[in-house]
Length: 149
Image (tube, rainbow, N blue to C red; front, side, top):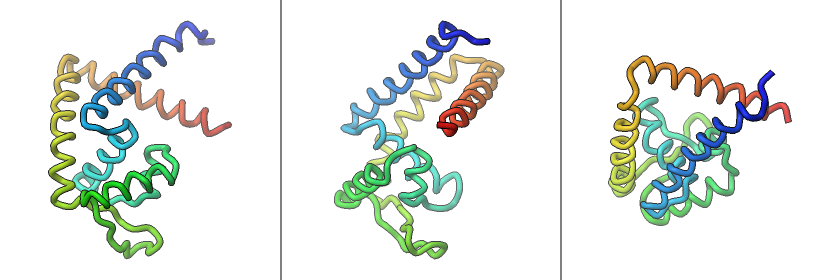
């Protein structure tokens, strides 16, 4: 049986990591949730060849539909994103960065990518694989336990 003294240090480390991303986001005038959303809107099309919907963003970031909608509306008003018709489901518009939005996203994401690469670079290849594997396994178990509520 695992006791609380074994769980708490890891939870504190994960909280510190979340706080570091919050700190980074604030340097660019964002909340952490907005940074998460921006990363999905900017990176998903590059890696998967399709755009995201607000429903997708809410599910992936565990955000309320209202938070996602307000953020996307704000970005749309600033000219950062445009909403496209979704041929697969007309109820859910696809979100695409505009040229202005891509410039905005790049100015935030490129420094973050460099920071993350430098940070992971202090680990050996074996340590990187171990970190990714164990963190993924822990997150999956945590999700399953939370879904039991």
